[in-house]
Amino acid sequence: MTGGHAWQRVLQSACVGVVIALPASTVQAVCVADTAVPGSDSAVFDDFDGAANSAPDDAVWGYDVGRWRTHGQLQEYTSSRDNVRVDGAGHLIIEAKPTASGITSGRLVTRRRVPMLYGTLSARIQMPTGKGISPAFWLVGTDIDTAGWPDCGEIDLVEMPSSGTYRYTTLHGPWTARPPGARIDYQLQTQAQTVDLSAAFHTYWAVRAPGSIVIGMDDTTFATFTPDSLSPDQRWVFDHPMYAILNVAVGDDWAGPPDDTTRWPATMVVDWFRWEPAA
Image 1 (tube, rainbow, N blue to C red):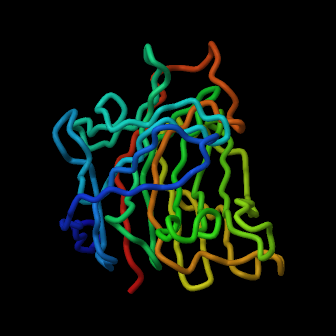
Image 2: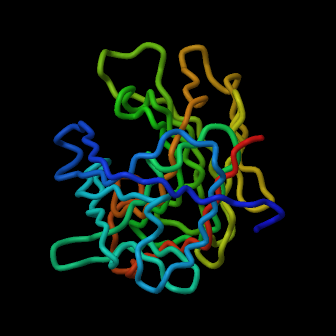
């Protein structure tokens, strides 16, 4: 019991393989490890209470793995305990680090496990920071395999490229008219100077309702988005199920490359994750 609510874990699982077609210039050897769960209105609360060096709950979390090249990213995402693990003290650890073969990191997804439509998504996170380090907590439409990106929609609750004291909150969606097959997105973005988000835990949240997305941290609202926020040539594509992503990217075009000041490992620490569907 937490906050007067009974939180129900999603327990049903079945292994599946998912293949995503991406341009060869942006990704190499990418595999998505997933578990199929039908659409569910179940509430989920994960406090990462497993044993030290264990995997996160596979009823809630899967892995995106492979060497992603999107926007010049350097990391290879893995499912190794070196990069993703529960620490035995009630935390999820997602860690980016250099190795002999390159930089490895972790990217966890609720894809096909916890589809989320209307309700409140939140997580209590202590972010990493450093030159070239880009942690994020975000949502992508579950129809990405059929609709493609950006038609599936993307909601970035928080991104922090190379800085613990500057955050970005962004919607990505499609234009009404664009060349066939073009992956050209519009971006609605708010950004602001903040306290050092790597110095302590903060609760990042998004409340979704029909035609409304409100995003914030702790007691502060970052942004409110509605269809009225868009221009006539931008499409609202956010009223359908989405899945959550937690990851630490390294060296993209936005954050720039790591340098001698970058502290390794770069560690995202997640105290808890919660999804509460709207009544």
